[in-house]
Length: 327
Image 1 (cartoon, one colour):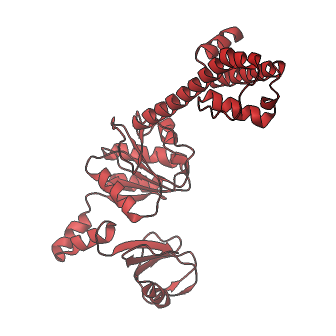
Image 2 (spheres, one colour):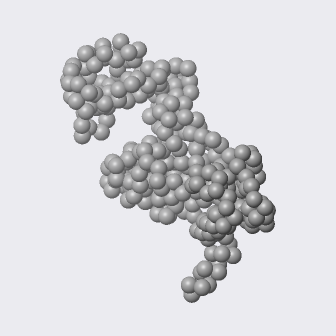
Image 3 (cartoon, rainbow, N blue to C red):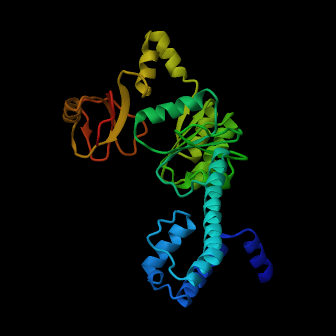
């Protein structure tokens, strides 16, 4: 068994075998040069420098064998072996990089070591590119990983791609870095797919913010009963349609407040660092170029607009500004 493993490693030029061959060749080269009396090449720094320039075919010429025996050793043993090992190592290195790039391009990359990033679970040809554009325009600099069952080819530079057999597959979700993701957005082809994928995500991610898109209110209630920490967004939003009927133009304003790509103001949220009145917090944000519109206390599901409220440390503050304001 061990001989077979050694044979396979040697036949495939495993990095360990290649390193061992290089070490043996360097040691034999040094011994032969010492036997030939090439004292100028025997100190560690001089030998490593000379061996590296010889193996890479640079050959500066400032160090070279002086005796006839030394030159023959270099010509018939050092040069062929060093150059062959050097070119093999370079070829294997580029082949490894090429294979890694190809795997990532085809969605076979592994991003489980990432943390604090954003994972988009599910792909919709119209909605997903817009979501990615919005995230990038937000300017927080978080990495984006897209997990989809479609055989996409990751040519974009704004996100990483993971091809999954199913949106609920734990191995693929882990490969996308879901357990340590800061935010996860789930949007499946149907509500049942979204529900199943959200349950799979929450089983792996306990601390990140999970958002899912659902169409059916009963499904949303079922998810809220089992995963109250998940934020559910209903699509299409009936409230937005009714609001547009009652107050013409309001739908465009709300869309602008939700978008980072428009030139107008955008709705942002931050965490209160000091306890103060609503008016004091509003004045503080106004000096920074923002308008405070609502606050949300700990344990409260919905933001409220109450100018007489008192802001506590840790409350969420919702404000409108052209750009996100530093904490």
